[in-house]
Length: 184
Image (cartoon, rainbow, N blue to C red):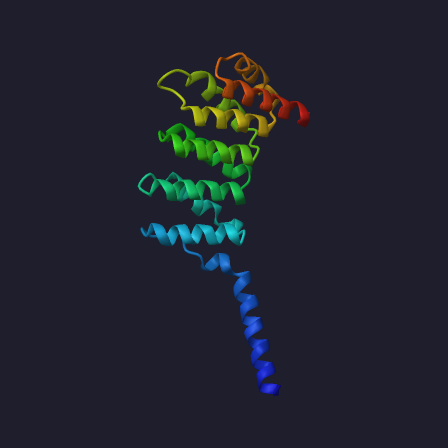
């Protein structure tokens, strides 16, 4: 191999390494093209670009955006975020009316094991029960999240749910209580 080719290969490898270190700076999370935004979000998650969580949270809170896109952004925060991001997501629970979006937020709060979320989730279980309140999937997700968070203050609320007639709620409440007791 000629010296020219070796230098050229070395330059290309150096350039590629430099580009991959700065990928997070190149990814754009603005605009109105949902397909482009979804692709960018998937890229951010795949490459674990943590510096983009503020932009992901902005998409999650933007009610003018496509619902699927918002949910994807919320789940990406779960993959990349931390407790500060969980605090921002908690505010979204207060303002969001869509059950699927709220479910995604609750899942991420559970994944992030946000201690701040425990009281809010308990309140949701107690205050939004009934025909017009929580849908079944959201209720079960809240129960799972409380167990995953491991907050002992959730034990009384979850204990009450062991006695309900719904076998899924009952089973998941028991599992959440086991999770909490195993984390102590």
